[in-house]
Amino acid sequence: MNKNKTALFIVPRSSESWEGSEALWVTIAGWSSAAKQEFGNALVLTTDRIAEPSEVLNYPLKRKKNEESKKPNKLFGIVPNIFKTLIKDLLLWKSSNNKERYNYQIPDLGEVCFVWEHHDIFPGIGYELAQKYNAPFIKYVHAPQVWEATKWGVSRPLWGIVLEAIEAKSLKKADVVACVSPKVVEKLVEMGIDSRNILISPMAVDPELFENVDSKQISIQYKLEDKFVIGWTGSFRSFHGLDLLLNVFKKVTERIDNARLMLVGDGFEKASTMKMAKDLNIENLVIFTGRKSFIEIPKYIDTFDLAIVSASKRSDFHYSPLKLREYLGAGKATLAPNAGEIPDIFSDDLHLKLYNVGEIEETANIIINLAHSDEYRKSLAENGKKFVVQNGTWRVELEKTLKKIKENSN
Image 1: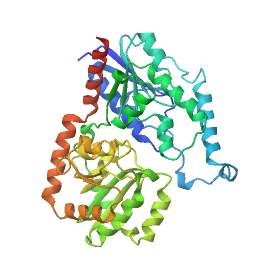
Image 2: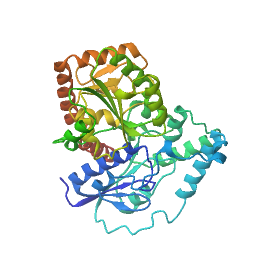
Image 3: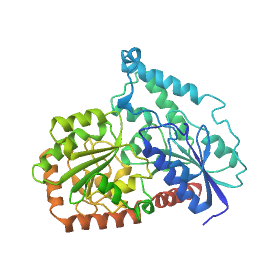
Image 4: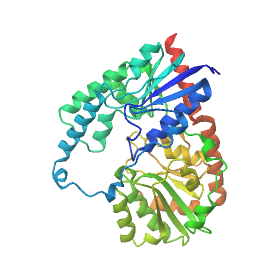
C-alpha cells in the first residue's frame, strides 16, 4: 500500500456528458475507487468539477429528457447525417480548445502516482498534468473513436482521417495505453502506437456493490413471485440487438408460461422495442423499467433468474461489455454472445453459457434448458462469480497497469 499519494483521473468532457453511455462513468468510478484504496487519495477531474470516486457513480449529474420523448427539430431533421456528424465534431473541437474549460483551482496534491485519462477524439489535460507532476501517463481506450463510429455506420469522409491522426498523436504520448480487447490492440498498432506500451485491460466490476442487496420491493412491484425472470440492463441502441432478444423471448414464452423479460434502461430505441413487443403479442410479458441509476442496478439484477448479454454483431467485433462482469459479479447465471473477446476470457458451460448471435431457435432452446435446470444455473452462477472475483475486478486491472508501468520504466 502507498497511502500518501494521489491518483488523478481526467475526463475531457463535463460531468453531464455521455448520457446513455453510463458504462463510461462506471469504468472511471471503478478505476478511481481502486486507486483510492491503493494510494489513499484519488480525484476525478471533468471539465466542470473535481469529484471523489464515489460521486462519479451518479454521473451524468443533469439528465436530458429521454430520447424518445424529445420533439424532433424539423430543420435539423432534414440535414443529412454526414453534416450532423460534422457539426457535432466541430462543436466538440471548439469546446476542447476552450482554455477555460477546466475553470477551477486544482488543490495541492503532493506526490502524484499516475495520471489516467479516458480517451476521447480530442485530448484533455492529462498529459500536461503528468508532465507537471513528473508522473506516469495512462490513456484508457474503450475504442478509438473514429474507428468505432465507422463500425456503427457513422461516415466521416476526409476529416475522419484528420481526427484519427489527432487520436493517434494523443495516444502516442502515453506511457501505457490500456484498452479493452485484442481487436482494439490491432487497431492501435495500425495507428502507430508502440505495442510495448499497450495493455489489454477488459471491463471489470466491484463485486461489493452487488452484495447484501434487497430486491423484495422490486419483485412485489413487478409481480415476479413464481416467475422465471430473464434480465437485461443497458441502453436501448441498435447494436445491442434487442430485436433479436425479443424474437428469442417470443419462442421461450411458447414453452415456459411463467417467463418474464425485464429490460432495465432507456434510450433512443426504447419506443421501437416497445412497439415490437406489442407486435409480437408479448407486451404483457416484457417489463420496461425505464432508466435506473447505477446504484439502483444491483437491486434489479438481483431479481434475475438468468441474465443475458444481447448483441447484434458476431465474433469479428471488439466486445467487452461491462454488464457481463456485473451479472457474474452479482452471482447470476449468464447467457452471453459468442462474440469479441468473451469466448477467449470465459469458458462456455463453466463460467457462463455462450450463444450464437442471430440463431433465434438455438438461443431459445438454450434458455429453456437453463430454465428447467436449477442446478445448471447454480453451477454457472457460482463458477462465474468466483472467476470474476479472482480475475475481473477493478483492483486486478489497476495492479496489472501498475506492473506494466514498472516494467516499462526499467
